[in-house]
Image (cartoon, rainbow over all chains, first blue to last red; front, side, top):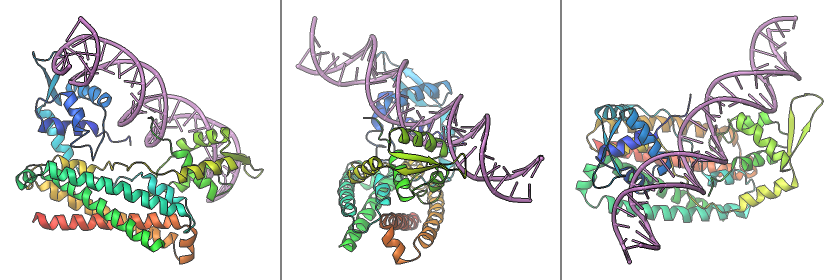
Length: 179
Length: 179
DNA sequence: TGAATCATGTAACCGGTTACATGATTTT
DNA sequence: AAAATCATGTAACCGGTTACATGATTCA
């Protein structure tokens, strides 16, 4: 089977929660809101928007204010497509292509100093990541009302924090057993 | 910067620990040993091997036994390249492109029943994965001696198990707070 | 000997990244 | 008016997947 196409669904979700959004703003979303969970560049997004308009998943409008900007909104067809996609069960887990695991894989000797290096380095990276995620949590969800309004987003942010903390704990513990 | 090319390094690592390995056997490795951490198909591997021979990272030998098979071994150049790669620090964390997070992201209402559906489904997937990983641990590392001989592999397998357990715990806990 | 599969290789396609390009708008 | 950047779009390239192809070997 061909690789599942998911970018249009993400864009659909973004447009739904941001009516009259521009392509540029959609691009920005991938660097802020969704940035921790998915990446996409504008050169991917603009052709995709074109296709989505052709397929009538979204509708584009222009403004007299700015001759170049296009304002996208989701159509009822788009709503259906998005709902359908969200309702479909996830069939398989992603495989985590991280270089950390991969490099460790090829280091056989328990006494190889590079094990220690890799782990301490990974700890540093994860600490950064954890700080970033906690920062996100504070700025995006300052109060309980906001949490209730974007509950799914809140959940996966919490999950990412939990996962990062878990990895840090494991790495620190492993580092101790190395000595 | 262009996307970092890593497949040749993995193949290098495989060949180093399996002298006189064939292309087919390398392909098989991606379905067993490394399968939990990286994927590659034979149509990627054969051209890559060709390039690696051209660059003299590995050397190919033929046998009178089988006219088609080629037996690859790592060269001293290849050893250096691999060592260098393993010694280089990992600069950034991978972003986890999992559909579970992504779908949750677009579900705003805490009472939307699809949250429950997605989580229970994810729990089922992770339970499967966990069973698989534990099975791997038993078959690949039956005794302490084997662990000492492939310590890096042992570590990342343990790490994968720990991560999966952590995710399961979080999901189960979250499921409770939903009720 | 015919069938199955082994082992290698190629071709077409696809999603994604980087770089290039170009008018419109805003800032100085 | 010139400079900066905004907003959109295109082109070249690259890694990876699927499908196709083919001769060698093994099995029935």
